[in-house]
Amino acid sequence: MINKIDWSFRIGLFLVAFAWFSFNFYELTMGIFSFVKPSRSTWPIVVENVPGVWGLGLITAAGLIAVIALLFYLGKQDLSKPEAMMALRMIIILEAAFFLCLSPGWIWRLALRGTVSQILEAILPTFIESIAIPAVLIKVFLELSPNKPAQGAIKWSLIAGTVYVFVYWFTNATNWIGAVYAKGLDYVILYPINMLSFLVTVVCLFALTLYVAYFSKRSVGKESLTKFDLKRVGLIITAVGLYFNLIYVLWLFFGSVGGWGSWYAWFLGHGTLWALALPLVGLPLLFSASGSGEYVKLRFSKGGVSSLKRKRLAFFLFLAQGIGTVFYTVFSAAYILAVPSTTVLTGVPIFRLLLCAFGGLFFVFILLALALSAVIEQEA
Image (cartoon, rainbow, N blue to C red; front, side):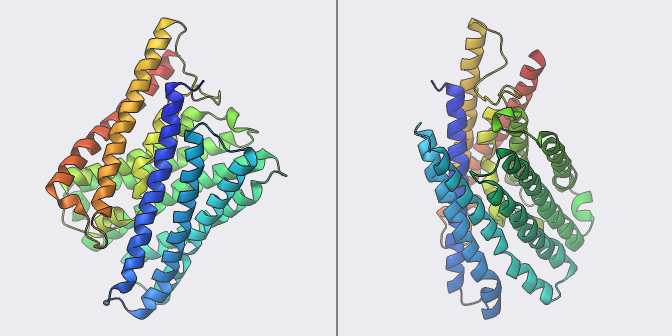
């Protein structure tokens, strides 16, 4: 029998997959509309936009496959192992192809001998994304074979996860550094909010990358997913999502501090904002039994107290996921309802009010969940 905490995990996993699919579908739609803009010159469209839109089409297809597969999982009609393996391999290879489609962009910009700011903000990030991620994803794809032991696939999945977090850090850090180069040091020194955002991006996200590398190194050699410390997996997923939520909430409450710049343009216009939804699946994993491979097994004492705590925890998780879902729904609506315009409706008072209210609450609930999981671990 599936308990309520298991349901929170299943629902969270589906919601994250749907967020991934829906935001990429929006990006694909906007990419298609960009072709009809008369102000765009021919060569940039051919060299950058066309491969980019192809890539967005591929990753949107990957998201759709993930949503369909997880609908079966959500409905307790789990796919067979071969079916799940086939769906996962298709998602992985489509994701790899998407990042490969970024290559013409940085090659084109490099050939034009871009400025220092362009190198930091566009060329280096897309170079790393288009090389590192496809390399590890293709290796994972090859290892995910019924004829090979699971140990190899697990090893390279851990490496791929580490590379992803590294890429998140590298792309955001280089864009912040590029913004400081263009605006000057006063852009962070004179504005505490920008200083906080800069330090969290450059220092804290790098520390998280090191932790992920450490976790992956310790976990290499596991023969099955049931041997994983899912609590730590949940911590990593939640921490990545917390980073995006923190930066976005800071912008909601304080606006473009120091004036609009390339950092805000990058963060608010980049396709990784679907990661705002990551805590929806990370939070339930925070309360799994370490090393048990069972996210439904909590470290509470036996008897009525345990049952009461389980009910309260399930309610807390559903409440947090509900707030996060409303927040992400309003966030998505602010983008989608403006199509085909590139203007986002976050400046409209009703959208801004709802985003501030639910975004702030969701951020607080993420912090509460992290604190609660730490307390439970100490009591165990």
